[in-house]
Image 1 (cartoon, helix red, strand yellow):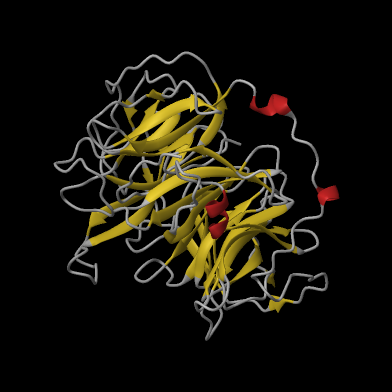
Image 2 (cartoon, rainbow, N blue to C red):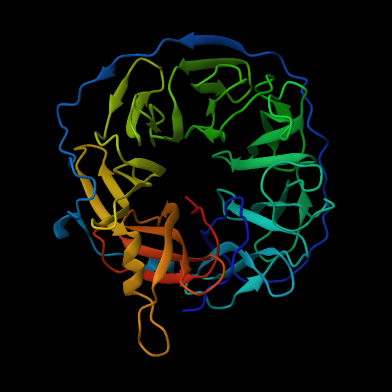
Length: 442
């Protein structure tokens, strides 16, 4: 298996969609205005931290390195017609340029470079209807190689392009991070960065606000109007609200926030050190990871979006959990659980799934399982010095996960990454391509 060498990445996506005909065109046709801040200050209500609700149905394992898998009778067959005619979009290094956006068939055939630009093009995200791909690019910056964070030399802005490479248009002017489409595809929320004297770090003089822009680049609105540190915005399933977390210097330090998409009303759930969030499919809950006191890791919780209470879903605080993602049918929560033990014990770096009804926790994949899928020309398994899972998304049939894995092979300089699929019961591990990231179309 050949893998592309990667540079520092912002976050990359693999997405499925039905499409055909690849015609390359790279001239932008629409440019939005710069980021304004001319909307009313949101009214706000701070909610005190609620007591954690006991769970009577808890059956999750106490040893999070357990390899108990989902029983076979839980898993149905995969309808092959789900993948007929589908395409994937992803970002990867090219031989001539920095990162490019590619589109190919599901099996990796008919790969096409749809951006074809010397700059770094990252993080492709399909629109809900599958007709557009949003991505970040630093093509207007002095420094056009891959870079991380905001700087004067390297500015990532938001662009949209058709899956065949035509219709390129610029959506934002200014530092743009974590773009996400609204459920109806008419708007995009994102994190905008700008220089501020309020930044406590002289080497990083940037603060952030959360913005919403129409998908054609018009009508940019600053929702938060309070420069600080924010996490990525998350649209509610009905598109009426946006959840995000704030940190030091933001509106409410260490809080989970829910704001109307018009920016008028904001509520905050205070004193929660939230790491990642995802909306439940009915919009009534937010699921997130939060660190317990005096623990090395964190646990997963479920917060009612009326901010009336929290339910704890896992009870293994010494394990760090991230990459939380909910299945399309809302029945399963997949996540990454990491814990590295001394050399005389097992390596525990896993993908796991939690049944949201029973709270039963199951093993899916361990990072070292990759050693069973790759061999050299002599049939030998490489010795890996670095293994890490980065990014998990669901296939639309609820029975498979796509994930990215970084690794470094001994005696070879640099890190590599590959994208794999695996069934929820831990079977059918398959290498998909050598791209660098992904998010799947609903």
